[in-house]
Each structure stands twice: as C-alpha cells, then as structure tokens.
Length: 238
Image 1 (cartoon, rainbow, N blue to C red):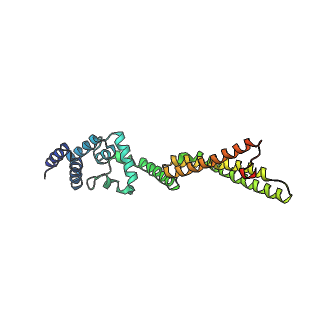
Image 2 (cartoon, rainbow, N blue to C red; image 1 turned 90 degrees about the vertical axis):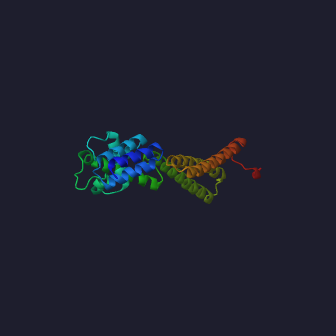
Image 3 (tube, rainbow, N blue to C red; image 1 turned 45 degrees about the vertical axis):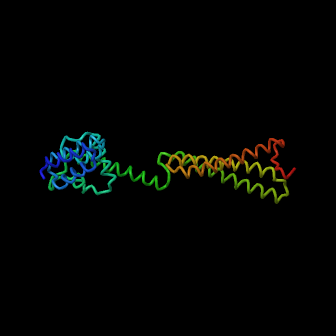
C-alpha cells in the first residue's frame, strides 16, 4: 500500500470516529518506513487535533522545525517517564536507520535528565506516603510528637515520684492526661491533613476520626473540671 493510500484510509477512519485505529495505522506505517515523511506529518497533525502534544512531539522531532516548544517539552517528559536509556532516543523517536539525532532532539537531553530526577523524587515521595512540599508540615508533626512523648514521660516521672513520697497526685495526673490528649489530638489532626494532601483519603479519614475522638475526650474532661471548680472528678467519685 502506498503512503497516500495509508493516509487516505486513516483519514476515513478518523472521520468515522475510529480515531484509535487511524492513529495505529499511521504509526504502523511510520515504524515500517521511518522515512515516510507525509505519513509522519499526518500522524503529527492527528495528535495535534487530539490535543496530545507529547505524542506530537515524539513523532515530529524527526522533522526539523516541525514541533513547537510545548511539544518538545512534553516529548522530553514522555521519554523521561518511559524509563528507556538515552542511547535509545533515536529508536524512541522512530528515526530512519543511520540518521543522526536531530539538533532539536539532542537539545532535549538535559531536560530529559532533569525530568527523570523529578520523577524519581516524586516516586520516592509516594513510596514514603508524603509529598516533598510537605516537609515543613512534617517538621511540625515530628515536633508535636516529640512534645507529646516528652510530656507523657515527664508526667509519668512526676506521678511516680509523688506517689513514692506519699503525695496526692490524682489531680495532677488527670490534668497532665488532658494535656497529653490535646497534643495527641493535634498530632492526629496534622497527620490527617498530611495524608489527605498525599492522596491517601482513607488514611486521612482514620487519622481525622482519631483526632475527633481525642478532642471529644478533652472537651468532656474540661466540662467535668468546670463543674467541680477545676477538679476533674468522675461520676462514680461523687
């Protein structure tokens, strides 16, 4: 089948709504005959109509001056995300055998390396379950956790020491528990926000539920204290 016949048949399929088949037939022809300029141009135009600058750039970089800056940038992103080695760029662009890498394609190599580094960082962030932009929030969360842990340890030491000395430590222990629960609630709320920002809604909901439960408990203890002149006293102690 001649190139113009491939183009005409692809145009008929495109017009009838068979866009995937039209693109597949043009790609197949270009792969079989990379030097088929008219078919390649038709393929690029179809991808432009489809609003796919990454594919338009990929198939158009073989023709000097054909691709736009946006298409070149998107093609660089596409190549970086594909995971193939830079030495396979000519194969990725489906260049004619023995053809030197076009200057526009060669100029994209630094951008390809940059995008690969960005993708690796994002993949690592997803693996950790956080976003790199949340580092400041992560510091706040770690700080809240450290404060909660330290306050619990200090409370435990004071209550234990007071008990040894025969002091009445019940009131202090209960107020210290209120403080610890408050810090735990803040920690849970920050974790809920962080997991939600990282695209993990169900984990965020779980942390949010824990935050709500903790603050409900804190509110109940404060209500008891207000009812007994600052002393947290439970119903069974009346």
